[in-house]
Length: 131
Image 1 (spheres, rainbow, N blue to C red):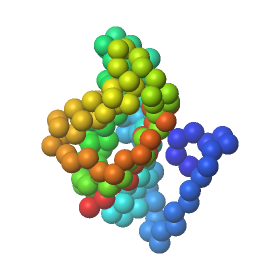
Image 2 (image 1 turned 90 degrees about the vertical axis):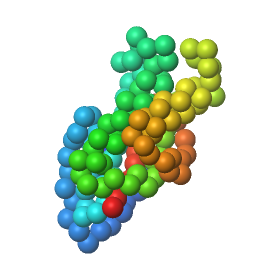
Image 3 (image 1 turned 180 degrees about the horizontal axis):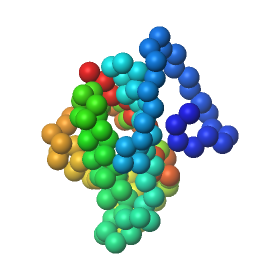
C-alpha cells in the first residue's frame, strides 16, 4: 500500500514481475519492469508564503513526479488521479480548481509535457508512468 491506509478503498494490480519500492522527494512509488506507480501528498500550508498555496503545491508535486519518471527512464505519464478537497470553493481570490489547473499547467509547460487524462479531492496525486 502506498500513501494513507485507514478506511480507504483499495485497488490491487497483479503482475508477474517483482516490484521494487522507493521514496523520492516525498513520493512513495513502486516499479515493476516498465511500469511506475506513485503517490505524493503535499500540505498546502507548507506553501503559505505563496499568493496561491494550492497552485504552488500542485506545481511542485508535478515537478517532483517529472523528475522521478525521467530518472527512472519511464518518461510517459499515462494517468493521474488528482484528489483535491473543496474543489469548487474560492480561496486566494480564485476557485481552487482553477488554482490547481494553473499550477499543473505551469509544471507541464516547464517540462514540455502534454496533459494525460485526469480526474479529481487533500492535495494528493496518484499516478502511473511507463515507457
